[in-house]
Length: 169
Ligand SMILES: [Fe+2]
Ligand SMILES: [Fe+2]
Image 1 (tube, protein in one colour):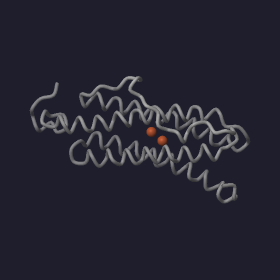
Image 2 (tube, rainbow, N blue to C red):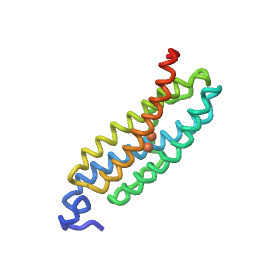
Image 3 (cartoon, rainbow, N blue to C red):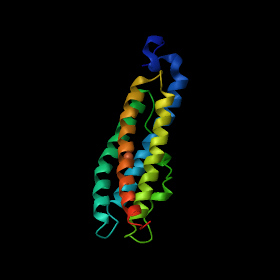
Image 4 (tube, rainbow, N blue to C red):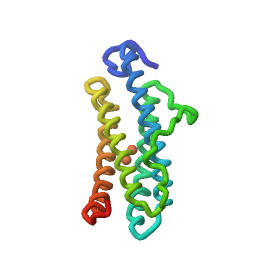
């Protein structure tokens, strides 16, 4: 259990309030990852057409990474004496990653992925800032995850660029 020794940093008693704030940020991150897994599964299956194949394969790879991120966030919540939330607390937010009207609309999917990754980058950058100097372990973990999300977004920006160069969007 937690104790009163300040040498224990974020796990010490006097850091309880700060720990609570960090746990809240981690819970949000956990749900963001899970919603992304849902959205990427549907978008790795639904799209049709020659051009869709590359996108579907890239999303299939990302699903595994996002799932691992969710597990990392859950484990860290527990380590900070928090409780991983249940599914009834989940509220969907990714309006931009719903299936398009036409399943050949690959650009819709690409834009949706870029928006999801941007949201993750913004939230994780905030966690990195909030944990700076107070919780190095969470910060270190989130920096690694942030790098993954930056890589995901960069890949899909490249896909979008291809369509822009061709004048399709
Ligand atoms: Fe992720
Ligand atoms: Fe991602």
